[in-house]
Image (tube, rainbow, N blue to C red):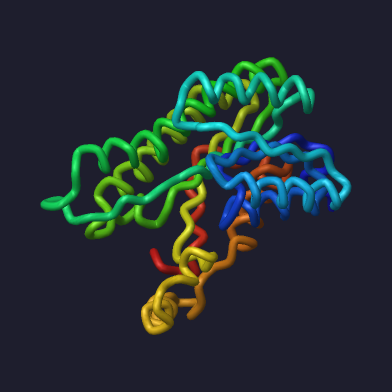
Length: 248
């Protein structure tokens, strides 16, 4: 089954990690991929070439989703190049972890801006196109931390919980136009970033997960494929926890 064959997808923050895994999975299923990166020009160019080699249309855009005008410009550029926007995956995000007594106002504001405001910016930017099409799938990357909280991550948890409330509201607003809005909440996903953690720390994480392993970018990508495809045509306003049972 061609889950997303011929669909045009935007993925923010896709030059590495989960975003990269999503981009590759979509290209393998025949989707055309527009993706953004902030500063990793080398990895972005490498990924663009990899995606094109899979036989789809692909383009990397250096764009800051946290900036309202940049998001609008990106949506316009993608429509001009690809013709439509069928799927938006809001994946861009940062962490600036600290306990409340030590966290700075700047670190709080920056995480909210990059993680939460970017979701508003990008969703608003693609809305017009999706309304005209009377079709679209919006997928927003939250986290298990946004569902249950985590000590030392109040800014991150607030931003990721905000994404859930935003998505549910948009699902109610745009459902009558056949535009769906859902959230994916990944748990402990093993990427190059987690590869820098001490092995005993990673082992401890795995031991606390019912499936006894960390997730992969492909695990998250598969959930994105499902929510982008017609298999999920009657699913909107939901949060899908891709966490190996962490929140069970």
